Image 1 (cartoon, rainbow, N blue to C red):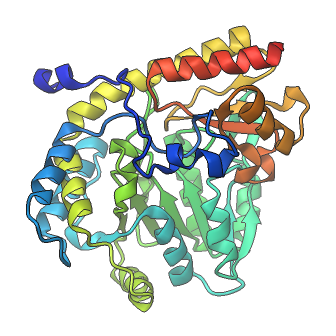
Image 2 (tube, rainbow, N blue to C red):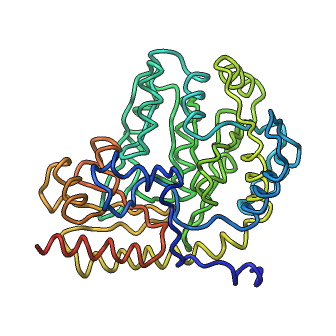
Length: 393
């Protein structure tokens, strides 16, 4: 690790985000109905982004003209090198389609690679834009719910195969948000086998791929495939380096005809992702963010362990799943015997903690809550104590 950088990395630092137009903080009254809530819901971090990213933005801001921009080759090179260096995946320049965030990309991909009425598989409880991307494009949602067995989420492969027989696409969340699974190589290969048998197009949302806790290891789905023509891979520096507000991501699409179909969708709605600030932040993060990320992962892992241990010891009616990846913790609150609305209000009004309600991620999330732990440990400790105190009252 770069020792000079390591000295500047302080993930315990409390940084006020008030009055920065932060959805997470300045939106508390709108989201939760009160200001005095510790917001641990939306998936951005309370950590300062890598200093090289901040410096790149400052350097660009010093030029006083912020006009229309294009993507330099160096942006593509930074992503190619990151995927090779961190994931052992060698991609080609032409495979990359830069786009404004993963959620617009999911919607555009559903439009490009399916027709109205086609079946699209989702695996709830799952990131809720998966549902709207299918419903709003008049496709048919096909549910392949994850199975919770021995406190561990698994894919129901027999059911997935039955679903694939009547579907055009699978929206795969890898690593999985919100349950925190990092799919093993054997699991991903079974998905690929099913997809090959049924000519299924897979949209692999791998936006959390860099946020993995050892000994788990992220496997790029497309890298495992015999042929990659039906796999659309979404990646971004947004979650990894805490720059989601800059809205720049990438799709990796090896098949030229499929790239053309997707670009036609973006052109049809005049979507442009070229922003002078997102461009420099994207490149700086992927070129210079290794040491910062290598310092953050152990910090998050110890925070995760702290949450799991504290909940087990002091809040026994709630079970915290030890995420294998992402900075999200899935909380099983079903033993509290509260309705989803009552559960949400308990955390807000009694505990003063703002979480994401589990039913947002589909019916399979009923009785659960999602906690974002990407904050200084002192903040997470206060939230946990608030919850424990509220349950004892």
